[in-house]
Image 1 (tube, rainbow, N blue to C red):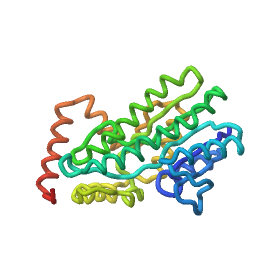
Image 2 (image 1 turned 180 degrees about the horizontal axis):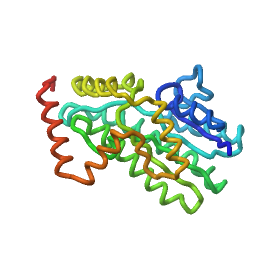
Image 3 (image 1 turned 135 degrees about the horizontal axis):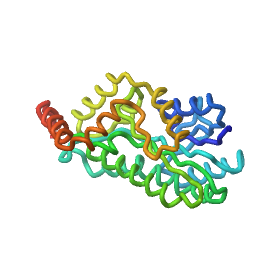
Image 4 (image 1 turned 90 degrees about the horizontal axis):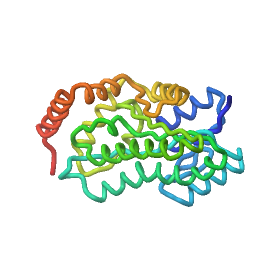
Length: 256
């Protein structure tokens, strides 16, 4: 059955891959992004309440309802705790956490009216495991995981499901949005993204499979699944890996 889907951050990266995957399945997709252009059906700045209300109005006019809301748009950031500034914390929180919160709050009344729907929030493996140098990114992605689970509990009575997506590093243009005063962390993370063999299309395929399966937590790639398993199966081993990584990061140096 064809579904009505709204995807944020759809102009490139995972958002574009998700849009294509939904359409290949036969779904109708409203592709949104903060900058209008090719492949974007509707301009939507996820930090704007007015833009979210306009998106709800557009969905009501186009379809009369919505089956899947994909809160995908986000930015890259991070930095060691004594380097990352409070302004950087506020910037990444407003986009990566409150973007999903705003979108959910905007569409929940419509989903409750129709008695169905599926919220899909794109977080990160960083929401489940927490490497050094990424406190702000880890914290907001962990908050997205918690927010999604809470929504799943609160909204189940209206027939609304919620899933959170937690991929590891994959090849995307997310690093184009990287901001932060800790240049060393940006270089390290950028290298991990460049060296990854996982594509956005592969992640998108796993996300659609997870949605079909009704998974509350979608961990779409093997590297992410291994890291998550290590944390729960061998916490001392996990801590040792994380602290070794922290030591290596400090050994690389960088301005403070």
